[in-house]
Length: 370
Image 1 (spheres, one colour):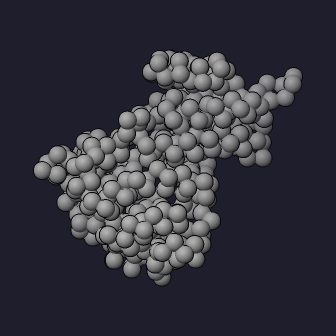
Image 2 (cartoon, helix red, strand yellow; image 1 turned 90 degrees about the vertical axis):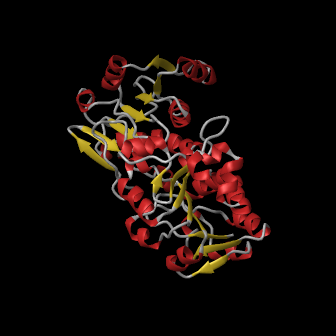
Image 3 (cartoon, rainbow, N blue to C red; image 1 turned 30 degrees about the horizontal axis):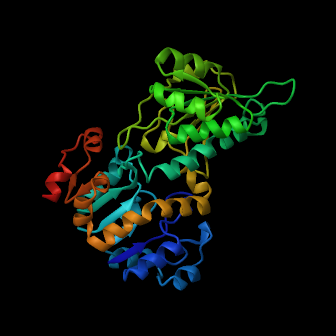
């Protein structure tokens, strides 16, 4: 199979979908790998590293998209990439289509077979979302702490405090992988950390994991309101796989926070879990509503591309092997978890939560593979 890796074009997206080590394994299985020149530079992988791995370096994106049977990306296609997509081409990337109706429409119009990293399942959850959730989760307290500084418009509070002066109160809403990493990282920075989740068993796990250093609370509207009002940093990490994130924190709740408090919305690529959230970029990451600061960067792991690219390839490579070695239909028939990743094919939406969120007609994966 001819596999193409274009450079990412989303604002300040520095990751690349394949490492040179991944290219070695793919070319070793007799696949052709096309890398757009410069695609890996920001992640610390120069063109000669890919060339040494057996990949072909091509001058621009047009050739990559034109020649490749399967395109590997990190983020959803951008408007400038829509005309390059073609019918029956396989696209394997993060899509988050519930929050990207224009991209969904373009994939349908172009007849692309699009498989979303974030809806591929596994015995232990979402294996292709997990590494980026870990990265975003660990970043969230860092960016929250940075924007708490007075020079950034924050309240001037040091996240870990000092003897005789209180630490920041960090509230994490959602105890999944990103929430877990946010809570543990914030705790390690010396913050006073509370995690809210609906799943009591998950809260027990987090409490045990932290040596009972975390405060854990059952999530409900009243508790969320009380905890948000008392927080210096709120981290939203609520996930409904493939669907739009629920708006659990209202603007009225936020208005009761102290001036200069910070909200970090990790769920923004799924529409965000704060009512006041809107997507931002690494170039302009924050905005204020009233006296509170929102950080809503939709590709947070792009800030640490070397780490993120390595973690992503480690997770995706076995699925890439299956798709390339067997063809997408046989690969999906053989692996129900990979089949859950199919989001569009032949002009149809094939992932029900996305179809529901977009008000589109749904075609089941079973029907596609029949």
